[in-house]
Length: 295
Image 1 (spheres, rainbow, N blue to C red):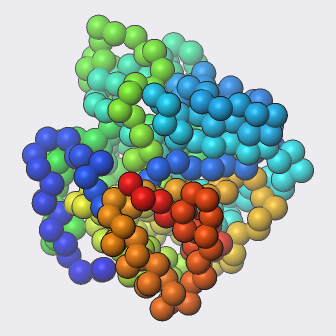
Image 2 (cartoon, rainbow, N blue to C red):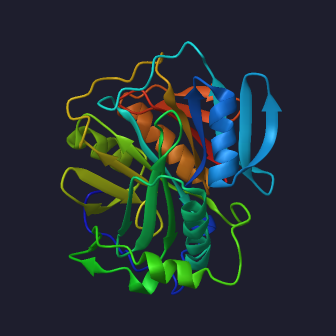
């Protein structure tokens, strides 16, 4: 899966994630203070509570769950050097939505950790109260995504914050709009030479970009639904189940035959499969649980 691929197969305009053979469904986080973290995702990120129980809160948009928070007050705080979550990336429908959120964040005094124009997208970064990384971004139209040598030429350039806020003028941020989703998951891993064969050869994502200690992988011509880096975690071993932070990722597979092929490749590569009510669970080389479900 590491050879150059047809990255321009998607139609002009905004990428249709629903048509991608694989996409991210919802993400599960293990949190120490459920009330505090749930309030953050509701009030700052703009998600809507869908189901609330004493030890679990599910949030999303329009009835669809994007984030599942599970309480574990005795969890060990996540280690920034460990394998696990780098950030959960929330994709907004268009540039104006990102501009509205930026204006809202400025007015509310929300602290950002960074911002960048990645050439394929525009993004801002922050963290929840327990340090779980978050990206909020909007894509550029597919025809503007630069390709060099069969892969996307992504980068980190200065974000046009005034232009974004101007694009969102005329309306106020009123929570994450319908059509928003988790666009990608960016993970910390111990070794890219191990991550690429798993997420590429086993799961079936294509390598779409390599960038100084990170690999980006996408399906259906998208710039990436998954990314992995070793910026903080080089050499990290399996993730401790006692840690707070990332607990699992749901991957929606559009075609049952694609899912069956993934399961077959996982068996051949020696990755055990578990059956659950929601789908098929396999774990990456660092123990991160991935649940494959039918789209």
